[in-house]
Image 1: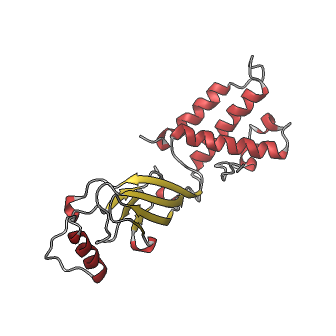
Image 2: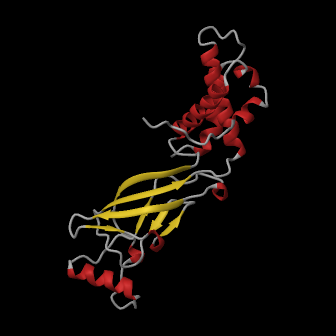
Image 3: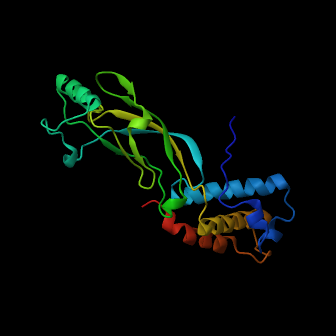
Length: 220
């Protein structure tokens, strides 16, 4: 069974260099690492988006609609590849091809700290079979999640798009680091003192602090 092992938003060193160090003083090295991994996933779940670096995520999307500004004019000169795709579309009775789609994961803020790339892209059409698209021919904007097909790529509305990509904060914003620390502290307090709160820490208050800092990253 595979083990979930994300890059934590806050490291063990980040967590133990401050006032929360006493909370995990009795934890083993592995237990501390596990806590930060769990806190990272808890932050992502609270935001309903990926924040830590990830690779190999595959999404299935349905190709829908088309930007009217990208509608083809038969009299516009096309390069050979685009002309071939356009001719094929005409032969199959479909010239209004989809050129845009958006992947789910993109940075809600601090886009300069985010890195992302598409590693594989394929199309499953309801007719005319399947096609593997060369990723170098698509335009991918990691800051918005927008992807544009090359003009002439045969993508009729209703096509199933399978895209594999990676992304995440290569450099973690400071407020996300602190939010992860608050989330980890809340989890540690609940583990150490789940009933009467004699430790002097309020796990609900710590979690509320974490959620407040995560609010700008939450998916709308």
